[in-house]
Image (cartoon, rainbow, N blue to C red):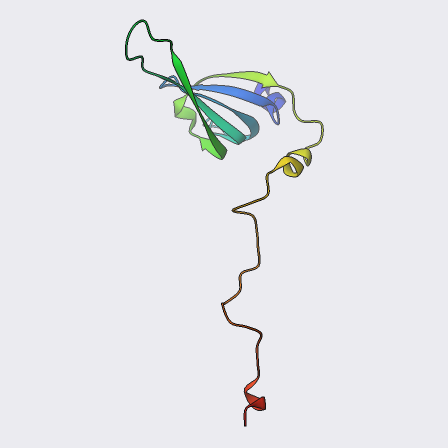
Length: 115
């Protein structure tokens, strides 16, 4: 019942190897496997010396499935979006967007026209 209340909310999930992943909760199951949209991974890098500041690396993952066995903690970071379609409007257009694929040949000419 508590998990149902967190659907569509933005969550921060802590994994057993100390990584943190933030994303919008789309689904879960009885094994606590979860599906996150717009996921980003944050991990702390090892220091080269004690005096050096702790560095954090961020990686964009997108749509992911997390195995429940790896999850240590989940916290709500933000409310669900007001308009779910708003996420699609903000998506960047460019490489990877859908385009028609041709076969590399110019327009079809029938064999009937060849004499």
